[in-house]
Image (cartoon, rainbow, N blue to C red):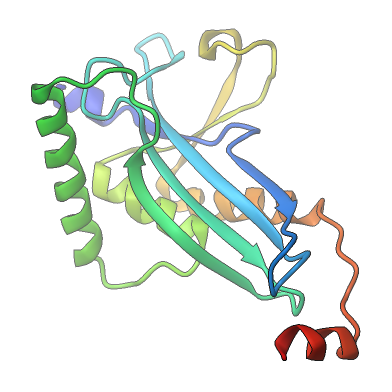
Length: 188
């Protein structure tokens, strides 16, 4: 991948990148959990969004969970850069993937701030990967990237956009608070 293509890579925040639901059957029953899965795309010379094909960036994803507890606090867990569903991998591609993950991890570990939100993690991942920012679809005409229009946000806006998407997803989950008696029973 040339330097020029690398500067035109973006995180892709689709409408389905953050989905939330109420968790059931655990100590924190009915806590809302947002599942975050942000893919990578590239911006073609004509301004259209394309898959990251034929490169180690193909199928690379920023992935994790954000749980909103009953007290309103947010807890981030499981955030990582990973290959969620690669179609096919040969030895050469696997070696490129491992090299990219190691380089990105080393760059993230060198950053002075430990991310506390999904947006902060996304910014650090984008910075570690050399991405330009965030591509957000503004139309929903079809499943193909080329069927839609996008707005491109620079790196400084990534945190705000991702954290807003998490908040928006979590705001649609309704919960009925536990009584003090129910909570005491669960904790015993």
